[in-house]
Image (cartoon, rainbow, N blue to C red; front, side):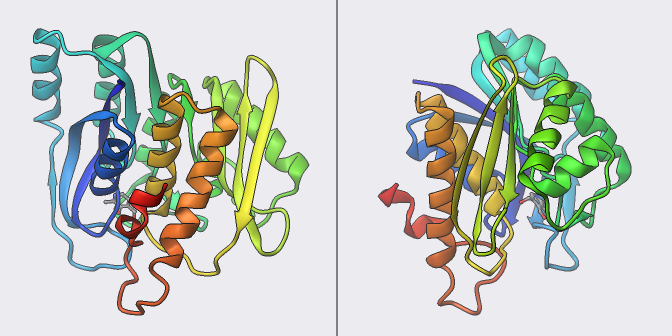
Length: 271
Ligand code: PXL
């Protein structure tokens, strides 16, 4: 059984980051420890007046205690990080808290639809680049990939452009780079991945449900990691993640009052 630690915020209300990673990874039978990067009353997309307690000071104490206890993980999964001092800690965790062969998996959750998330500043992009360069696997959406590569975000990309982008991401360091939110044709959306050592691309596309919700990137990554850590192929893991996001969105559409996240709980048992 795998043991993972996830480093991201607790948005107390809003179905994203740790409140989705924890139940999803648990459903995959993965023991999941948490390293909360901060505690927010809600996520920052669509709510105003949210509160935030930064946990930068506490995080190294938690990591030191684990190290002293001899605790080690099969993977570190990082998501939203709101303070750039925390990137150094992620690198220390990679050195001190991973088993031999353990993986650093980075979802550079910092932007969407061409823009950084409201509470984030450009130093987060610079810090994110440093952990991307040390990661074994990364899962940016197209906006995040553009920020990581210092390129302007374009609304649409050709297959050749996507593959070029993946090769440039791979050149930053990671063995596996997954681009999410890729669409070559109207009505479809999916993920394309590149494995650096083999030069292989895999891709999976599904139905585009024309409504965007917060937290779907975190859900995608959590399912992909759950499946992959359980021994599924990269392609099957992407397929499971894409289909789970579609099902979660469909489980939410009939409720107009629920627009801050998706009701993944309704479909978690049907994976
Ligand atoms: O889902 C990504 C995410 C995570 N955490 C916080 C966020 C967001 C997206 O807006 O605001 C606090």
